[in-house]
Image (cartoon, rainbow, N blue to C red; front, side, top):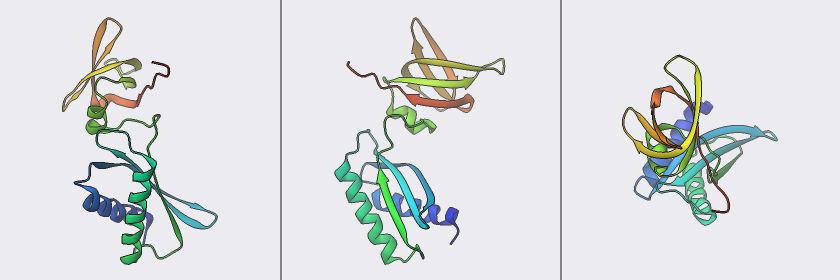
Amino acid sequence: MERAELLNKVKDIFDAEFADSGYVLVDISTSIINRQLNIRLAVDRKDGGINLGECAGINRRLCEILDREDLVQESYVLEVASPGVDRPLAGEADFRRNIHHTIFVMFEDEAGGISQIEGELLEVNAGGIAIKAKDKTVDVPLDRIKKAKQRVKLGD
């Protein structure tokens, strides 16, 4: 089975098994480490803040399903982990989870150049986001965003 097909099947299994559990699949990838297939899932709670025990439980359940359905024909390792605080934001759902948080956004401006802004994410709509930076609010269309991350401030 091709890796892309395997990733799609694992994603479908995750969606079917955990759709109503409050978990969201943030990212999925494969790599070969020491001649062994490594399948890595970054999972979070829909409202953010997954813990190690939850990751371990998801890992066990997915391994059981993959083994029972014999989807992976070679030796593999399944990793389920938190996406971490420095993960990129992608898509409307990621931005919605970060309303009222500080984010950094790099985007294509109206002149075709690249602009950056850091501030509080105020609003998310189907077409874009609104960020309050210092004394102004900037609207950024989602399709112009090149890179976005949540900023975590320590010591607050």
